[in-house]
Amino acid sequence: MDDFFLVHLPVACSSLLRKFLLKEEDEMNMSKSDFSTTCLLKKAFIVRSIQEGIANGSVAEEILDSLLLIEQVDRKQGLPVFDSMKSAFCAVAVHCTLASLTRSWPCYYDSILRIWRTRIRILEDSASSELVGPDLDKWRKEVEAALWDSEASQRLLRINTRDDALRCLRVFVEEARSSMKPAFLQLTLAAAQAICRPHRGTDKGKGILRVNPQRRCKLGVPHRHYKVPVEIADSKEEQQPSYSKFASLSTSEVNKVQEALKTSTADLLAVVTDPLPKVLEVAEKVASERAGKTLRSEAILEDGNKNKDVPATSVNPTMASAQAERVASDTGGENLRAEAIVEDHSKKGKRVPPPSVNPTKDKSDPPSSVNPTTEPALAKEGNHERQASIHQNEAPRPSLMERNGTARTYEWEDSIDGSSQESSGGSTRCRLPSPKIKPASPLKEYENKKWVRRRKIHRWSLHEEEVLAEAVRKYGSHWAQILRAYPLEFVNRTAGDLKDKWRNMTGK
DNA sequence: GTAGGGGTAATT
DNA sequence: AATTACCCCTAC
Image (tube, rainbow, N blue to C red; front, top):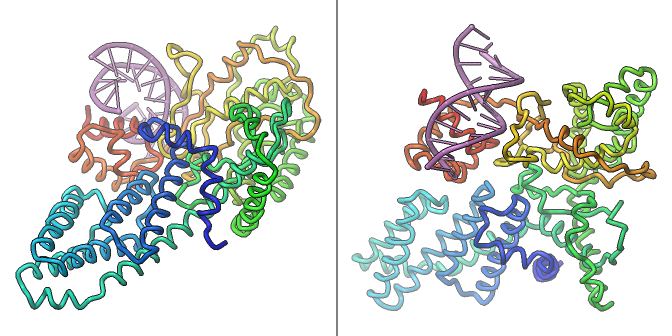
């Protein structure tokens, strides 16, 4: 693919641009998923602009801003700063400064003032950028010296800083594009599928393999790795985007997109290994084992009836498969993890304390193990599950006034990658004919939501405590701000955690 | 968003 | 049993 972004950017943006533009000013409030997509697109735009800018061999000072912007976007997602970006930043700063040296001394002085004594100095003082480092410091001495030392200025003039800058920028652009490529392919694929897929009325996407690159953060699979899980579409989400509006696209447009999609898919397949077959096999095995146990023991069946948070998996291999598929989708190829997760579901089920269910209701309601009613509840709960990724601890409750039964919960594995979490809304993934759907009673829904998962306790390390103390010194008790400033240190911590910890540390 | 009171469960 | 971490809730 000669120009990857040129082909894919418009396609990928078509369904997301509106959201992107609308939420730009409010990105701290947008959902994690929208946020990661927005970041990806922003970065793509900026990288693309740099690429175009240097295409004719010019190195504009604005590139410094572009690089800072990219770093800012990356930082928000906890992504590391590429060395190539640091080199490019330094090279551009040097070139832009020395380019003015050829014009006039005042011009050169002005450049130093503007680039080094203002822009870079602010970055250094605020320690807000990793783009400033020893290299820049070394060059600062050089360019400052050249202000008053003609010999030094002559020496600098002999250096071909333009070529250096262009080379560094090209390396960075290439690296940035490579790092974004997998995620971008997913995004393009999702957008292209949305465009290509005909509107299907009541068939709410069942069985359609859909990619949602916006899930990355929510799932806790760090966006930084750009390993985007393939996700099974759920009916709820399927209702949201009105794909019918694309139905009027002309055949040529559709063909064009399909061509792009074909190429994208080929690239994608080279990057992603489909974990589904393996996981399905494991899920099938687990489900059949459990089904066997269930048939042998009526007591277990009753237990399954009580554990409405873990419905049906004991005797319904279809649902176990569906869950496994969701897990497989979320893990983005980590088969082994997926196996563990499938098994973990059975553990969770056993740990759930039985809710106080009205016995009379038990009689009237079929056992949950065979009652599909509970599955939507599970899906709903899945939507609300606290993800193991950073700052994902807000689970809506039925009422603000209602206390959540936090502690009496079953624990969830909070691996940082969050892959143990089910994706939201996998409820429509059952492939076997679904049993008759019976609407859940409000009472049942209430009970399901009552049991909110609690994160696994993760003890604070000394390093974390030190960083927290330092952060409080620097920012005060602005926990959200601290969290944003130290995304790498406070992995899997919430602002509330920071507050509580600080409260503990200070003995308040 | 934050402070602070307080509850629960896990860990030491 | 004490401590720690997580969580809920309310007020501001």
